Image 1 (tube, rainbow, N blue to C red):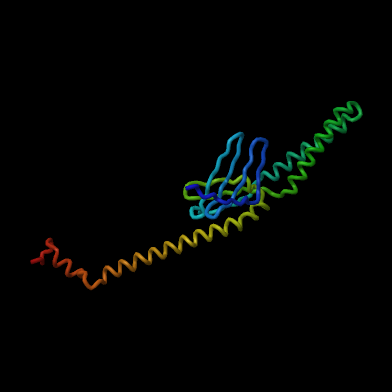
Image 2 (image 1 turned 90 degrees about the horizontal axis):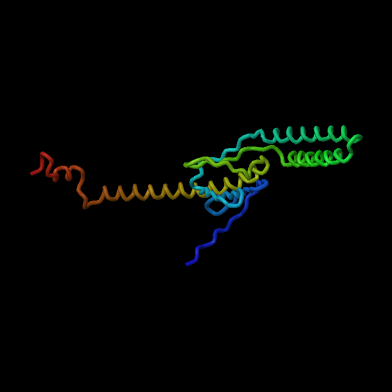
Length: 196
């Protein structure tokens, strides 16, 4: 019998590097975190019933990238102006480099502040790189939270129902008319000193 194919929905956020990418996908009862470093893929599943908390904390990467990109842009612009009269070809090359870093600086500003998004389970805490921007993280959080609440509320209700059934069965066994009471069981016990 063929296995049933799981339908996944990709959540907002995607991290793309030079040789790697990360995405987070949503299924009915779990999250699937896909990492593709180099030329292979790694998958991590987080079942909603096992998730204990989701932690979003501030990150200094946004400020650090702005300082780096802005600094390189400023330095490249100064060098391009210095070499403009003496070595025009080198000045043009440095100018293109400065323009590239300016574009990256603007893109980083447009994407907004960074954060650290982590999923805590009973086993460990996993950092989700695809949700490293606050804007994206807070877009995905309500979707994930809705599924977690649905799964864990259903599980809690099921556990309460099972506990109630066990209590009712225990009460029925204790109050059964054919079953001896505690005094009768003690009297019929051969080890009891009152047994005949």
